[in-house]
Image (tube, rainbow, N blue to C red; front, top):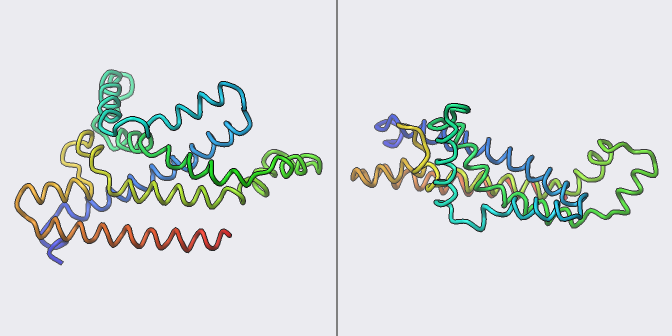
Length: 214
């Protein structure tokens, strides 16, 4: 209880982490699905380039990518003033974690047989109808798994918020680090235990969800 009674920043830190996790995971799930389906329908060199670009953040150290984004958004601040806002954090989280969703959805898309899609076209199904009744059910588990893994990693992310978070904006990881630096070990450990509990509950939720999608 000390975590919530004696610390005014604990609840906002948890709220910020969950907000960033929800937004970045949802954007990654949607964007990753669009990328995978575009790559699947485009076997040319441009499709391979798009696939390489979607996986590029995984090949770079996180700190290098975050610093690059900081410099980029700082340079265009007069045009699009997102630097030092929660918006730049959502963009950074999305850039960092997009490869996870792409990989999960790519794995799920192996269940998509061209014969199924062609059968849908032969029977007069529109692109939306084919996506809703054939494509989406087959890749739904991959989308759900990618969303949840992105969410779990996002609420525990340390490098990005340490470098790019607005002043006085804390998330779970930076809250723990600050409390340890200030000597409040008990508060830091309490938040760490709570973070582990939330992560465990999230993993349990995705396991139950993927079972229902079978």
